[in-house]
Image (tube, rainbow, N blue to C red; front, side, top):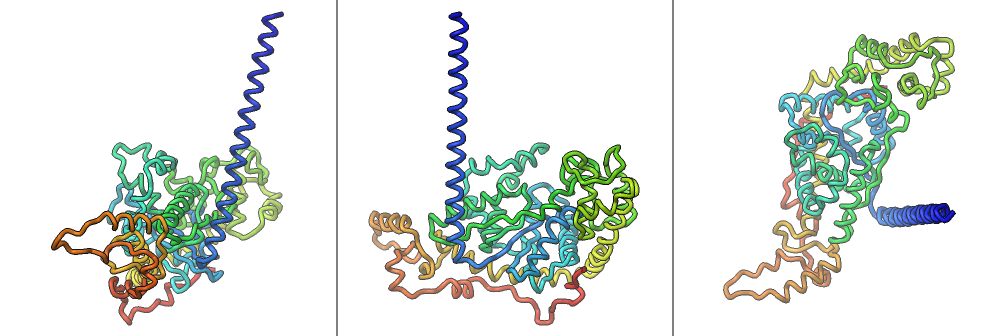
Length: 460
């Protein structure tokens, strides 16, 4: 009896401890959610002073597949056509975080640009350029590297996934999320279209923006992630519907590339994994293979999923695969033809990318001058009145000046130090725009270069 009583007491203690732990965890989650909600509200309030700006990038590594097109490029085109200020970048500097064949990388850049234009992106409405042609990306990337901690980067899971099979791991692979943050912050973007797998990188960007703003004064908006089209984000591998369609898939039959010939598309869809049930239904958790084909069919025909399933009631999955294949071939055919046309006229393609780079440089140069002045880089005479210096920097600077003693015959370098705010009100020095004009010569295209009409046609 005594042993039984002790067992009951021990069990009661364990249950009490479990309830207490659960209560503490719930309380912590609740506090965290409240803190995040308050932070989000504060961010929204701060962001009101910045104009809406959309930025996104894509790596030039291999052909785009159907999931990229439906999930990203279609959304980008919608944003462009809605009148938003949009900036889309071919992030070639990100692609060299793993070894690349130089000739192949260059061809991939041209193919990516041709694909973007063929899918409806218009260089007259959007800023479309190649990352490495705007050097300010690298400048801001280094500045942010000096502000980001190893511990913060160590929490990001993609580094572990991408480096798993590498013997010698490049440093660039570890710090590339910081360059990604620089890409966004360089243009003071407020909204960033991304996939769900990139959300942690957006959180890093938000973190670095807050650190900079706190230390040097309000400079960057806190960007928001715009998640890719939900249906398109569900497009799965044709050979393994438990995972997303990916251009890095080793099985070439698992993905439908935009430039695949019609017969290849038909063959891939015919070999798509389904199940032993012949009916066509949409049940993602029970029948992921067939449901994946239904989503693809719905997206390329712009037809609701319910209607797609209703129209396929009278046929089995074998015949339905042929119907899906025909729809995909029909949808991609004009896009493929326009891509091929662009690639045959690379001179015009280069002109369009140079025009985009020039537009990007004008914004990037102005912003990088402001950023460098705030942190004390360069040889600018003073910080413009338009730039706020945070109070902690003012106090630090004044203390440092008091402790410094000028040696006889030594040059006094007042112009390179941070000037307190009250002194700035008395001095009328160069403003940011004048500094950018004087110190950062702009790249100019020849007057004869115009946007070739054939290069901006949109596929309906």
